[in-house]
Length: 568
Image 1 (spheres, rainbow, N blue to C red):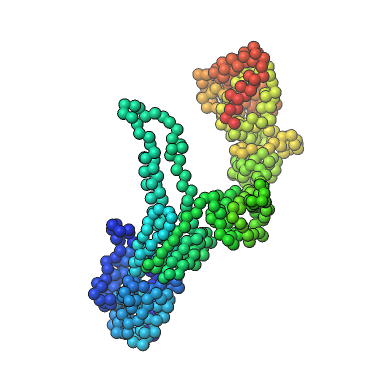
Image 2 (tube, rainbow, N blue to C red):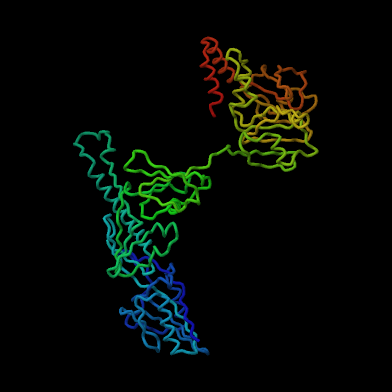
């Protein structure tokens, strides 16, 4: 039995003239077929530097291709040959008649070699590997400046060769631009300093031409075939990307940006303008733009078509994929609208005594506390609703618990109130006024607040906490201690800072929100807040209050609010 196997063949571009070649050492051309030992065979295979594969159904054999032929008859005698296709396109087979494979498809060459070897080695297993592809020379013709001729391996396809030309053209264009810039710089008389001037008009070289990749022409043996590389790159049509052959001429036209283009923009992978070709449909245009994005509204695709008979474009409303075969015309503009956002996304973290604590996505300011707690499984039996709190990590001007202060005139604002607003606006975490017991036990819907992005819901066990805020070393929450005064909690928070106004300490009741003055005998309850104003805040606020009283202008209120809420 004769078995003929064509192995995977890979290739690389040949360097330009003057560059060092990375091509494997050439076979002695004095003989086109040589016999090798098994060790030499393994060494030859390892020496291959080819990196691309070929398709036997489309690759054409030509002079310079090299084969490894392995003949394995029954028994220990194995013969290995290295054969090169001669300039006439012949393969000199071992102990068999030579055959012509010039310009045959690789699959056809395989059948022809198999027929001959079966006659000579009827009982042997024969394997044939295409080991090395032949070099080719390709000529480029284009109105764009760049490479005129390129050397490649014969496993190079049209797309790779065009990319090679485009790179050469870009380099040539960059060099030309640099030379023109140097020539455009006006001479500077001796003894004068360079004078600043508007060089935009001098250096504004607008070269709108670019390669027309949708109508590449390949001339082979006097026959011209047109290829569309966009259809290969974006639609995977491999028929548009053939193998090149020695002597091919690749003609690369130029296209102007404003001539016969189609534009796709909006909710797509990339906004793109490409050259129109007759027969283009909506599905090709969307594929060329990278496809619809995740947020695209497939029911709201609009095509604007400009007509010479009217100053207004004609508009088509399409849907995807129902209208994917809509036929386009030159100068069409396709706009894919995104789906309208009904809400802003956010995240809320819940910790403590709930069934499923963790971080959850929410529609910002669209989900309320009761609904959210239901989604996380509700409270555990050990939840202390009286001491549950909502911490707001993002400061919003529209918070309901600050509305009372915003309604006051500047001359009516207590200095401690202004200080409180200023300090709380700088703190990273604020407590939202919400009574969990009233909401979840008594059913008071007024406590069912809307949650915001960044909120943290803390549901503790019945231990009790007290909040210490303002000009202390470590503001935060502290365990409730019976019989502790406000000074004990301040000491637990590290004591006063150097900016603290010790005589202006205020106790804010957690259940009512009432502000009380400092008093050592005043009992502190769980949920209360101890607030220590700052001196710097008082000086600034006093100054702003005096201006408001003196001028009596509401513009000062805006200035104060801008100072406090400027981060938003």
